[in-house]
Amino acid sequence: MQQNKNIFTHESLQDAKSIQDILKAVTKGLAKGKLSLSDEDGEVLLTPKGLLNLKVSARSENGNNRLDLRISWHDEEKVVEKKNLKVE
Image (cartoon, rainbow, N blue to C red; front, side, top):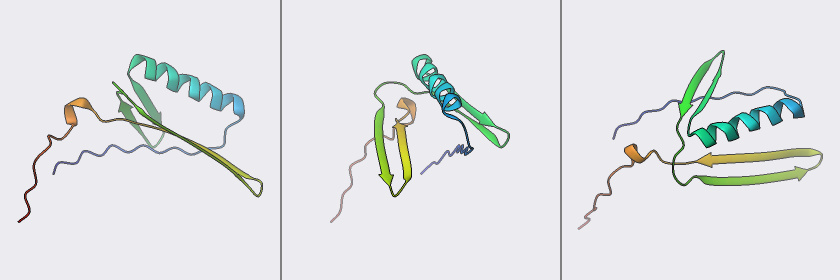
């Protein structure tokens, strides 16, 4: 099985306006079909196409709040061909 991992992670403190700007850039990238993310430690280029899976979850518990947005998809060219499994 071939694996091609290109992982990018960034964590920082931002004010609400900065996060709005980042989310606007993400929406523009989704519209163009090209998202480029980078910082001093690395970069990744994503090309979202077709139907995308969206997962939104939120939590507010004991003064701790969290909002998670996840967008995922499969690259059309890299979809693994379905193979039949035989077990006897």
